[in-house]
Image 1 (cartoon, rainbow, N blue to C red):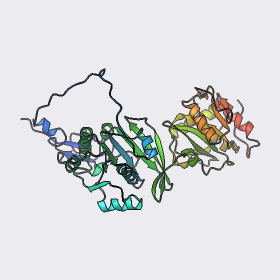
Image 2 (image 1 turned 180 degrees about the horizontal axis):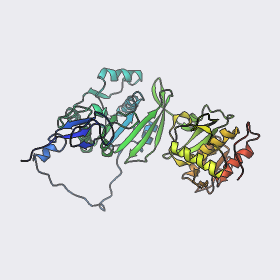
Image 3 (image 1 turned 135 degrees about the vertical axis):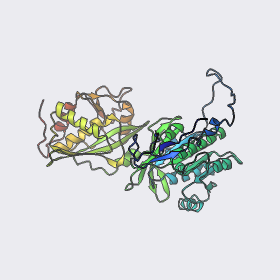
Image 4 (image 1 turned 90 degrees about the vertical axis):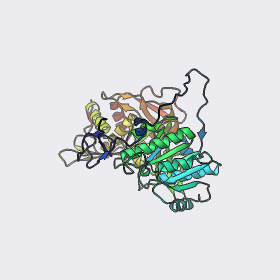
Length: 472
């Protein structure tokens, strides 16, 4: 019989090495490699010949049409929106977020809402005692909700308890990094334990038909800690984002097998827990200074929801050999591209200026449709000309200087008109379907970046200082 050799697994990224070493070659983490036995883990007993596989039935794709998966509605509109209309029975959801962001508060509110509707809901914590969970529920005014609580970390005991009695509709595991299974010979929190515990809980969800929420810790760069394979195993990955100095929180769907991805829900942290924000655009634009130069309103899309945010830019003379470029809420490489296009095709000289760009409210914008709003804010800050307070911008800037159309143009314009905006600077040919609400919104099509610069210089009145703009 061949001798079995131990493997060395990185606890940060899950890479396998043939020997121990101080630094992982895959992720670069130090002292993260731990020796693990090949005779432990999920699937080890089957490899030793514990039992033979069973024959199961197969079905055809063209057979009787299956009904859509039943949804478990929580009654919290923003949470149901992000999940695609509620939790799907038998699905597993991974919820990640920084410590103190409000994950446990949101889940307690969702559990109380479902338990109040007559469903069996179980909340299992591996980090807090039962009395601590009760204190949080008491502070939120939810102490009377019939939610079943437990403080346990053994996966085998958890599955046996959940299988006893009435099938639960929702199970919350807080957190997956604290769970451990007897099948794996390693400490809780390691890559093998997290993967094995997650697989056991996923198997229970699929066989019992219960929706399971796994709470995951995050690393310093905001990624969910543990092996990336866990994100591929679950049905949905949801990120809870926010800043400590602000009261609102953003729930974002990163992956969802039963609904749209990149969908967001906006909450506000109050003394009574997380409150839904019905109009996020009004929240992000609530305290903007309409007379200050360097601010442009961007009509963006987050999933299927149109969202208006303010893009702020500050262009200041630099005393450094290499001017500073600081970006908050947007892509740094995208800013460098917009600056290069403004210099090459619009004659706006920004090479000797420090540039600071910020998306107000702490929202992270990732779509290229924000190029036009960022360019308008940069030109406005450099020239000292304030943009029209009732104007919105969206469009993608090509390297040739052309303004390219973006999707969902009609939805963006309708959201702007609903909030009282009267003007919109958009790409040539947008919106792609239907007509703009011309009764309340004046649309100006812009085909080239030079047209944007000329329009700002012509429509803003006398500049406060001489802009660094030359005519082509």
